[in-house]
Image (tube, rainbow, N blue to C red; front, side, top):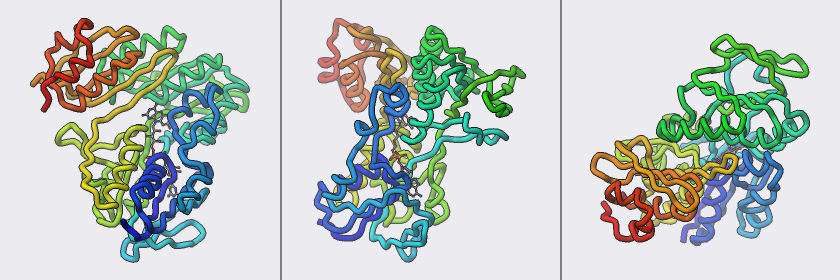
Length: 411
Ligand SMILES: Cc1cc2nc3c(=O)[nH]c(=O)nc-3n(C[C@H](O)[C@H](O)[C@H](O)COP(=O)(O)OP(=O)(O)OC[C@H]3O[C@@H](n4cnc5c(N)ncnc54)[C@H](O)[C@@H]3O)c2cc1C
């Protein structure tokens, strides 16, 4: 049992799971959660899907309500921003001047949508999508006046917003500066499949094109693209990536590299400070790399791992990346490091497709499922266990994947 005061900065998914897990594991001391947002901790994946489409409600996203947190004796400070850290005095300073003394601090501050530095980006017709309030504003804009919607960024969030905007009746253009979609997380063949999917749905996708200027003309935006094209649109959505909210850590002198560097116990360069979720830079299953994982799975797992580490458990957090996306009728799941693959092979499942990526030693380093159904679970097990399976076996639908997973040679 531990009894010190734990302060958590950030009341999102990682912060909520850390707080909850500390209590579940028997932490008896005070827990204070400082949260800039007014809402109880909630899950963000539905923001670009069910919330934009109007098929889900805010209540369904809530991880732990304020009442549930109060019942666990977790002191939540909603709508309050932490402005600085005093590591020597082990205090966090809140806006308004209140100071909280901690024995252990967890930074779970997540990230914010990157905004392009262009004149005109403050127009109410320019949106980003990170919070529930953003999603409500964007839905009101899209349902009030769908018109032409320009999405800047062809990553997962941009593509999900494009799919939802199409479903709401908007004409949609996606700009992507790279030469393919989702280039950071998938191989070229999957980028090509995503491009086909969106073009089939009537989205105009312009690759190797960026936004160079925009002008608010009251009832529309006039934009100029890098190839000189001029377009008009009713709404523009910036989906150009995430900026880690690591300023508190940087100012306090913690080791950071586009996020807070943590070890396998989720501990920062200060032994009294941990970090979890989108703001943390960690080792992952791909040896020799450190990265941030912007995913639901990591936010939950690392939130729990931080609590275990604080409770003195033997934690070795070095996750296999896992992310999913929903676009139109396609449910896409990715496990592992696609870029570590030297070759890939494909299996048709009863509902869709599974692609396996193997490195030079024949180890399964990643899997991508597109409407792959329950078979993805076994593909994920093969990745997590670093299994060695001949490509021909992976591709053969006659070999049940649950059996392949249970009998595979693992590292
Ligand atoms: C639109 C959208 C769709 C997504 N879809 C998927 C998906 O399909 N699949 C998937 O795997 N992942 C998805 N994600 C990613 C996933 O939601 C995130 O990885 C996860 O929310 C990260 O949790 P977190 O707790 O680290 O950060 P957050 O959930 O961002 O929480 C951080 C909290 O800290 C607060 N905060 C920051 N600074 C301070 C401060 N100084 N003081 C007080 N509070 C502060 C913030 O306001 C925020 O409330 C999606 C994300 C978005 C935005």
